[in-house]
Length: 324
Image (cartoon, rainbow, N blue to C red; front, side, top):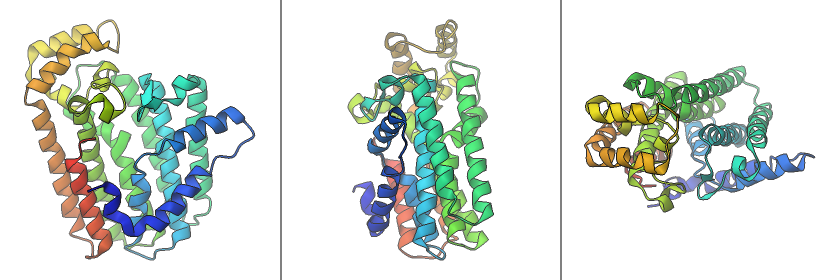
């Protein structure tokens, strides 16, 4: 089943959000507008707006408020992707040239900043001060996460705690705060808001771990970028971290490979990718992902039965089983 079918009852509202996002970029600076439009029109799952709308369904669902929160979070997510591509020196995203590759790093960084500014503008229509505080804190955490990712590139001496903190800031926090902001905009009671936040956090952690696994197990066609790209870019993901912890030769060889540069060529990365795929490191990573999903399901027990809860449960199941 396609992901979009799991929340098809939101289609009308999601189409309106999509329209708002795609038409949000209007500026007299042509290059900036072109770069922004290229990024937004590349699409994606738009899963963060889905979490906003579903969370709002547990309270007073005012679509105008929901629309602005959903738009803001999608713009922040999109802006962070541009920054990530600069940090990772990525040439492809979803099979297309990245903004930094089509233009340059300067244009890409300002495009990401522009997306952040558009997100703040969208939130200007929300009167709840707490919503603004949550959004600001989220953007701060994302920026810290980007700095941590830069600092940790090619650093073999990492531990599980460092990795988990990094992916929280890289991915999980934006999904968790999508749920929280939807709840705030919908005036959802605080106990249910906390349950939604916890659900989003755990789903987000699982989502990123699955992403890290797919970087080794999916094809280049499925990924829209070369398999093993994370390792080549110097990012120590969970399967690699497990290999580092359990295989002394792997750890020493990887440290030597990164001693001169924080990135690897495809040829340099291939023997390390082979070790990761042949060991039990993928399976161990999937088991940790499953634990986060179980925590997400536990959080849903605090929410009333209905289509929104069923959709949240189905999305979590889908994330745990996805292969692209």
